[in-house]
Image (tube, helix red, strand yellow):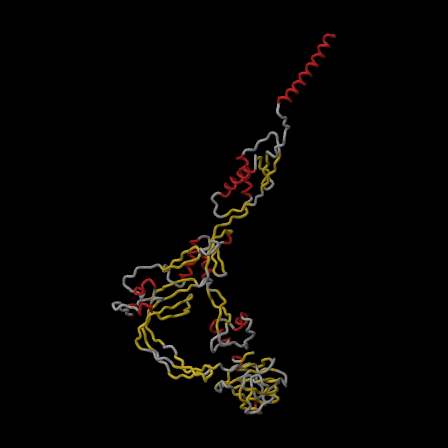
Length: 530
């Protein structure tokens, strides 16, 4: 037993010595000792819309799987497909781990994407006509739409619309170009045959002045001439590519109807001599109330309008207007332009005809510019006079005529110019003046400077004042309570001439203001300025 115990102790001592030796040798011969280090996240779990898809090695692998799934969902679908999907990668560090099967993960992602499609945006084209816009599905629809507008006024297949890029714009914009379909003419010769490439309009005067003897232009050769030379759009038209939901794309037939159908459009009417609100309403086909509603400066039917004023009215027009030039042969009577002889001693309101006109007769080639079906200008580009017209000769004044102002401050119009139905004793059915209701004693001014030709009492006028003005007009002020001037006085515009009252045929205090031209009463509101 003792011998065994001793041997056992000896073995334990030997084992310890061997271990110490091994450690010493390792420390002596190995250059360094490296402890185990962390390598960070080396496996990732992919989630889409909070659904676990599987494990991947890195984010690049996840992106590749999602791209493949999207390609499967979108496939050959046109336009842009919008998918509401949120992806998330959660990483962790493991000693051992591997990614899941890629095909299984792609199948899972594809299913989620299919269920998450929000909407599909279709490739389309937006046609902008000034501020109006319509969306159609293709460039061929754009061209058909624009051609439909042209064909409404010009024969079909005479002109073609193409879309050209506007290189002056930073964003891609297409603009329409209209070109004529040229057909070979074998029997009819047009004026343009003699004018070369420069065209019938621009070069005609030059060609005629430099014509060679062997080119003789005979208008009888153009009796069949009736052609459209140029077509363009009167509006600013732009086309841009866009991606829109299918519900915002208009079918072609509906787009054509919307663009070509006449609608009430605002436009400007310029007042000419002789115009009244009722006359303008008749010309434009709208009511006086509509004119008042469209124009802030026109308060009521008695508001003053003057020559040259611009009034907003509405006329039936399509969204897209077409402008075109028609060149046509005609034989017609014509008038020579009026010839004026100016007299510096007369006012511009005075004209005297010195020679009456007489119509002439001519053969002509004329260019007429139309907007839609309305002619807006006409120019004679070639003519042959058969019988010369005799012009009208008019002598006309150059002096600026005097102005007229409202003859009192304030006041309310109680009786307008023209026929009236409510009558009192001494009143006439036709009222050739304007009545302003006011307090007795209100100051009355001379509407324009001139000479007093009457001042005093005159039957139904009561106390009144008549003033003759330098331009030949006369103003009358009636029903005064007091006259403050005398016959023969020279008064200035705005000078006090009397006080308002209710003398004569009057049922209340007011001013009866009358204006006469060549002895005929006219509406004073057409001539006075406030």
